[in-house]
Each structure stands twice: as structure tokens, then as C-alpha cells.
Image (cartoon, rainbow, N blue to C red; front, side, top):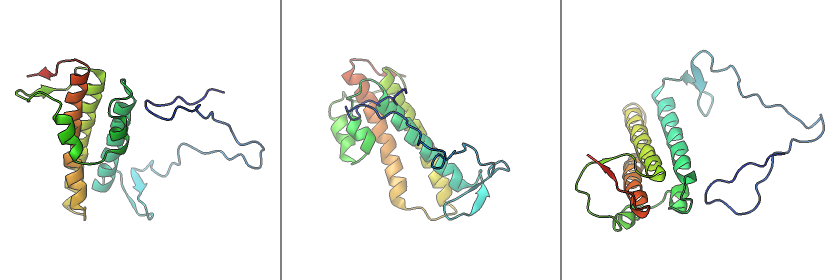
Length: 176
């Protein structure tokens, strides 16, 4: 059996291979599809059925995409670059700490440079989209202001980390 690969910065123990449960009485097949969304609807927690274009579903999806973008940035080389921060995303002070290492910003920075930086810029832009979706959702639903502030600061953090990734890799930011 092929073991699942370890992601950058994860535990150093051996990866756990997939092992199906033995015995026909305990083996359950899990379908990837349920057909319940074929009509353009999905279920929210609690069972309410809504259109997949519902602002709640859009916001959830955009935040899910952001989570994937963070995972991609964390998995990219160099593995040790801010891995704890990327996997835990905590603290506004992280922006100030990362920015203190950088030269003063005098031009507009384009996404790119090192792979790590480009993926962090991608996470930043996905975060901005998630923020817009959550703001739109807040026009008709109750959304904690903490969530809006978090997404706003998180995108700022990704911008600074993208610059820092290039700086530490001795790669110039692409400027305009």
C-alpha cells in the first residue's frame, strides 16, 4: 500500500497508510455523490435546503477555498517558512513582526517572485474574495464583526508574508 504523503512541516513520524476495514460485515462503501444536490440545492447545517447560489453557501465556499489556498502555501517549499503561523493563523502582531524585516514599500507589488510568495499572494486574493462574500452575506444575515475584521487583517498578513517569503529567498518583489 502507498502511504499518504506528509505535508511540509508536519510530524516526522511515518505516514499512516490507508487500510480498509477487514470483513464484509464491517466494510461500508462511502459514495462520493449523493445526488441530493443535482437540482442546484444543498443542505445547510440543521437541514435547511437552499440554492447553491445562496449568499451563505457562497461565503462558506469562498472561505473553504481560502483554507485550501492556505494549505497550498503551507505545503510549498521552503517548508519551514512560517509553517506554524500558516497552519494556526493567529495574532495580528504577526503582521508587524513580519513587516519589521522588510524594506519600506515604495511601489505596488505584483503577485509572484518565489513560488511560496506567489501562493501567499493567491491566498491573499482568495481571502479578499471570501471577505467580499461575507460582507454581502452580512447585508441579509447576522455576521459577527469579528469575522469581518479577521478576514480583513488576514489578507493583510498574507500580503506581508508574500513579501517576506521573497525577501528571505533573496528574490525581488515584482513591482509596478
